[in-house]
Length: 80
Image 1 (cartoon, helix red, strand yellow):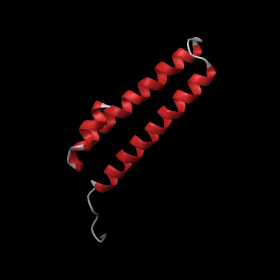
Image 2 (image 1 turned 45 degrees about the horizontal axis):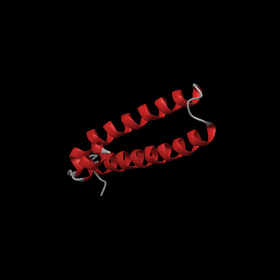
Image 3 (image 1 turned 90 degrees about the vertical axis):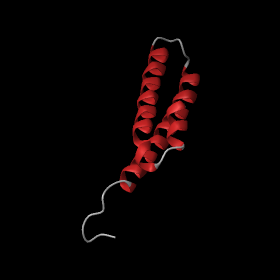
Image 4 (image 1 turned 135 degrees about the horizontal axis):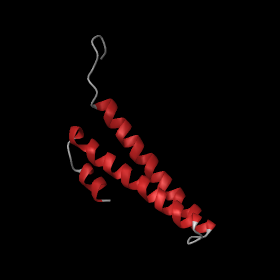
């Protein structure tokens, strides 16, 4: 949350490191959630509900970093 909040207030060229940090933290959360599920500390229903939301956040962050990379890429000669 902190990395996403920070990135939202920065200039476009400064956002990427914070978004990458948020993506790493979401990936860590996915692994920890999977460990809970595999050790039967979390039932299937709760695992599915949580992992669905985490996947959605991951997709949103991936889209944000993809949009930034196309916005911040240099324009090639002959392109508008």
